[in-house]
Image (cartoon, rainbow, N blue to C red; front, top):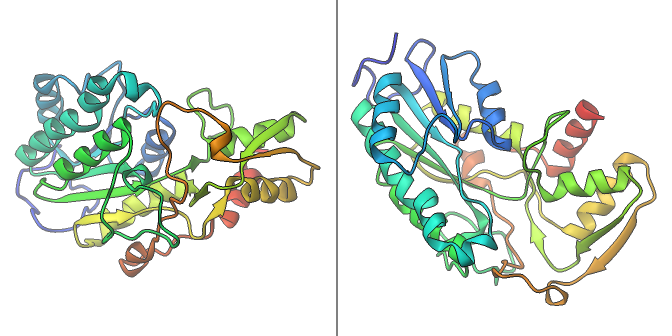
Length: 299
């Protein structure tokens, strides 16, 4: 039976409260969310079952599920493609968020949305926290920042900034992250091209999913959180750590960002501080520990 609207309008998610509706359920993060919330009634939507750019379709889908929580893990994440298709990026990353927020609020549901480190310029020298002012430098980044603002207008929102996702399950055939690609390249004995001047905070998708569940079930304050594994690293040094854990001799090709031409600007320094999440009761393990867990589970 679905959630009775306003049964628990200000409290935490509890077993039996109602369905957890997940949009983007076949994505790298969405698939992990479906697994993590398996102890609840999950309503999983993919782009084939729900066009989130259709407000009427969104309203019908959410009303039918009568959910306790709506989780939006869908995104237009073709960073370079957004430069030539900004309307498409805005439709998915911003306008669809508005539709999902309205439907979630009507259902009395908590709303969860994921954003990105790209909302920052990359000019920092220490990890960004939630108080730092966003300064997006690409069409993709602008669309994601607009989505954040719209998500935060929900009655009960959680907006989680994530970055550099990794953690594809065994046999995964969907879109893979940079760290996944580094592992695949090393295992195949290929040369691996890695930036020496781009600093990131890798994010393990199972940890993001569990952190999301913690926020929902603990009754943590609503708002904006950085949800990344602890620590930060250049892609080159991340590749060195991958090689160490795999026990292989890597064929690395170091490069700098000014050696490549990309349609969209990338922030050079985009490490995020997860201190606020830790203060909410969920300290994230280091990305190295998460990497070891993933490699042990999939290799």
